[in-house]
Amino acid sequence: MRNGIPRHVLAALAAVSLVTACATPSPAPTTSSPAARAPRATTEPAPSPPATPVSPEGCGHERGATTARARTGAYYFDGWSGPLTSTLFQGLVGGPYRSREPLYGWQDDDPGTLETQLAWAHCAALDFFVFDWYHDPGRQGQSYALLNTALHLYQRSKDHHGVGFALMFVDNGPRWQVSPRDWSAIVAHWVEAYFKRPDYVRVDGKPLLVILDAQWMLRTFGGPAGVNAALAQLQALARAHGLPGVYVIAGALISPTYSHVKRLFLQGVHYDALTAYDYMYVYRQRPTAPSGPQPYADLVGTAESVWRVVAGHSPVPYVPAVSTGFDARPWGERVDGHTVWFRRSPVDVAGMANDALTWLDTHPRLQAGRPGRPLLFVTAWNELGEGDYIVPTRGDGFGYVDALAGVLAPGHGGTP
Image 1: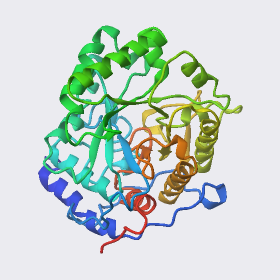
Image 2: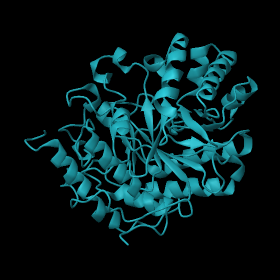
Image 3: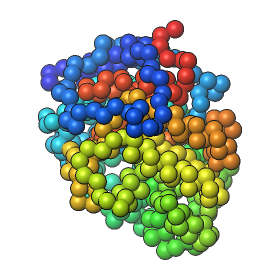
Image 4: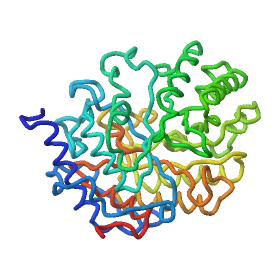
């Protein structure tokens, strides 16, 4: 119960806004040129009341393989199930960024809120969530103990609204680096608890696994030979359980010289495809460190510079990510000592999605998945603390859901 109102009532009210929201005409996609992206105010709006309540079934479009331009998954940060006093809610609840509160409330700790989000994701023409997966998160303290909760709620949910799921193995940094001795138990858990489920996403018949950081895999397993042995163990276990293997996509920092990824492949580490969770790590390599509000077009330009390098060098497919922004001021995160954030709008994000789809269309050799419906990632569904999210909120309503649907499934927005 929140503020005296039962949780299931809140979830229902939030869910009800779906029909009206999905019926809103989607804005036309734009190019990524700076002139096409109008700047927004640098402060966030005060919270506004939720949109008109709605039924999750009433999405204004029904898309299928013949209408969707890609098979699109959005990363889901599984960190909103703890108490509002936990570290992850720091700077969000009750402060100047309270407009980021999702329409179902801050916490996603019950099946109703998860099912509501799945209905909204369907309205955004998303095909699946990629849940951030953490090994033994409780070892990092109480604030992190409930990571992976939304993933478990997904498994318990009765209606996924046609939205599947996959995992992203969070392996970066000392906090989440795993020990090689835990690998056997980790991959066994993945195969037995997730990969065999019918709603788990498959590519070429194989369950999809995203690894956040290929460089941390090298550190964890002591180099290319160790990584290859770990991946071979994963593949062997999947086959032992009747699966044809695992389709593994690795996150890689791709600089303009491509030197780091060249080393990755020259060392003999081979993944099925590459991606990037976002492009901030490339953006921060600019000669002059930026500070303060930045145009979203700069983030798009950084991504497109990566895609150009990939097009000229990558020996394997690449899954571009649509960066929905970056504004980590609530968490006090800084970029090379500077506070940096991007001004964004639904039209901006729709424009970047269109750019990514155009890039895929013009580089069929680099498409991952079925020809004509390649994989595409969106970063992210609900990174509320870092400011890259499209989940319907009090500040933005369903603007990002509608805009994205208009690009991913053109002609299928609005109520029939």
